[in-house]
Image (cartoon, rainbow, N blue to C red; front, top):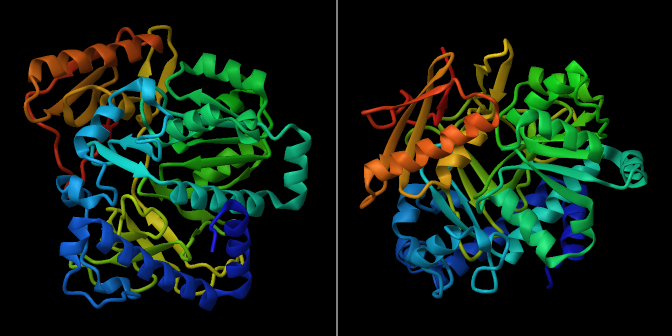
Length: 456
């Protein structure tokens, strides 16, 4: 069986037509397959699964994994013996290699995530193909046949609002698309979220996209620009991603742009995890992923109740298997069928909200910056193990840094301060002061680290 783009598209449509039993059957087959593959190619999983049955179709049999454990066992975790943490880290540190294939095969993505700790991710072609097929399915369902035709008539232009300058999943994927060419590369243009807002507005006005995809907090800032009349675009679809949104947020975006809004809940570990519906729920692509809401002891959380955390299994990526992986978010499964008619499991998500920071610019105006601008800045600063930024006054930022092992704390601070000062200056915020905190990043009562904390 060849899992090419055409086959994937047909299989996804067929599974949804056939209903929950067909989706569940595919999930069991794919879970058994990826567990067997992980055992055969990953020394870490070979040892972790040594007492399990030969064939595993029940995810609850698998031990729980998390980012800290997997990253600590990186060389034994990955399913290609040619991959090492040292090689991937060096590749991820080189901006000239963004979008190129690592070892001639894989895409590398780096992220600090919500924890403020850097992650290194290797994405194989199977994972990329499944992501593309499920994304296409979501776009078609959001737009409908008439919307697809209208988008095509307007040139099908996509504006992708992403963090640039590093091996972030969105930018690495876009750079790879441009490098390798093809018709998709001609339809998509990347717009950096690091661009000062006035310049970003001008560029989008000139481009006039039919579809806008980007981080939720950045899209909220652009909605305000559209409401003020400075941004003048008329997309058919706006797709927020990366941060949880309220119904009020999506309603505001829809009203500002006069467009449909399609929401996404996923992560670099499993980008295609779920897509939103008109009823305000996220539907899990459970033919290619397993989602388990659990309590603090990793016992199943009943439908209708928010979980302590959620365990995710990516059934596509064989080179770096994420199996029963603690993603850290709180989710709730809808106890009854979704009114939208989608047969896939429906969930609500609590957490990962974007924290927008707002500063006066000295001319009586407020300038707002999305949290992504700060997160990606520290992610690309060498020697930063963990970071936290807190706005302690209208014009003051307090920065808490935990340097990586072996890094010189003073040099790390100087590099971080220089980049942060440049970001502020680029946005006309020269009057904002940056303070170095003596204390390390603080953990929230729930156990997570908020990387960006706005003024109380």
